[in-house]
Amino acid sequence: MEIGLIITIFLIGFAGSYISGMLGIGGSIIKYPMLLYIPTLVGFTAFTAHEVSGISAVQVFFATIGGVWAYRKGNYLHKELILYMGVSVLIGSLIGGFGSRLLPEEGINFVYGILALIAAVMMFIPKKGLDDQDFSTVTFNKPLASVLALVVGIGAGIVGAAGAFLLVPIMLTVMKIPTKMTIASSLAITLISSIGSTIGKISTGQVDYLAAGIMIVASLIAAPLGAKTGKKMNTTILQGMLAVLILGTAIKIWLDIFGI
Image (cartoon, one colour):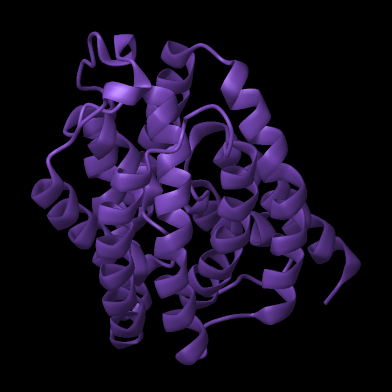
């Protein structure tokens, strides 16, 4: 692998993982399109959609470890929510990860586009009074949380994501979880989910190990730094950044699907 491509992959991993730690997502919503398009833009051979989804799956696992570790103090992690949604999303991601080999590249991109579009719409739903709750009094609908996490896991496993870019809007708009608790808990749920995606991608031969290794090093450095930044930021700003990020990615994916 050329040194220029190694540097490019590292920078993609660093940028994506910093945002991952800050906003409570695994980072695939950012790194999937970056890995798909940036190497070719700077003159290197393109990764296939299967390779990108495989690299993303492995990298997300390590990015979320760093993020969860940074949020471990301060009552940000809702352990019961993490257990219910984490187990369901793990089962779903295993199903999606193994099933993804049956899909053509266009199919993987289409699933990614659908997920990003749903997440973008949900992020613009008003969330009044969400962050006025005491973290110790937060409750949620357990059956609903489990079902939604299972569905997200299947779709996320297909594209090699851990699904946090969809879990975060669901937790904010449907489950009514405070923003910073959502960000911290979604990282932990994403960590569990990424186990299924990673096993599925590795066992079906969809991982470029050198590229994944470079991304892992970048994420272990950047994700904790992003999480520290996220703790200090205003929740309205965090929600706005997430909404813009998800909407922009959804638009880009759909433009490519339709060849525009």
